[in-house]
Length: 313
Image (tube, rainbow, N blue to C red; front, top):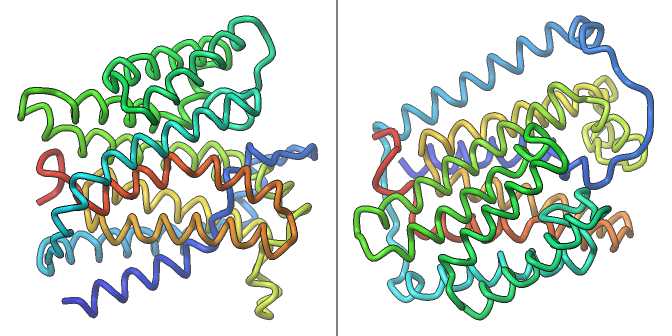
């Protein structure tokens, strides 16, 4: 049972290294790719990738049904992890405000409305760090996200729908009703999965331009360094999108949530270490600060798993 779990974890870790950073944070100018030509050139590789994706999903379903095991976390963590969650979210919001952005590095403050959001975001950050009216802070975060959507477009900010999950988690977790509390973890898990699926399409599968421009400026295609010269940058981005899609699907169904979370954490650590190895501390700091919400979510999912509701049993 544990051997199978370790096997799936190692497979996902190795594949997840194909996934790169949030590409919109480091976008550079470049030519636009015709999607029809792009996928017609890599039709066979896409078919193989989809087959492997479905195979891994099927394996995860089978393991979830037949090889389930739980490692209960120490009780003391149940007290401190939710508190650390709020602190990490608060730090990420304050850092974004300091850098004159809203929620993410590429949503830059450029008008009076966004300036107001910038200050509101900082206030919410301090409220979460100091544990002052966390439910009110959560509703304020939903308001900030909603106004942000009016400024940049609903489809654009869907990339960060996990912030709605974060806010819902805080509202539900601090509820006085036990039934609502049980919905906190499923809400943040499902919306985190949705974020990863949306990013897989918006930054990679339907927009490979971003990845190719990024790879032209950053040598992240390690497959070529291993001597696999035929593994082009196009294949690298395609693989990254499929892996992100896989991780998101597993989160939504609540399958092997803790293993999946460890894979996501490995993905984050890999991207930050790559920037450091390439002597790009500024990019590494941007990546680290931007991933603080993901780290906070990961701590909750490692502590609680998929939660008791809205998961495949």
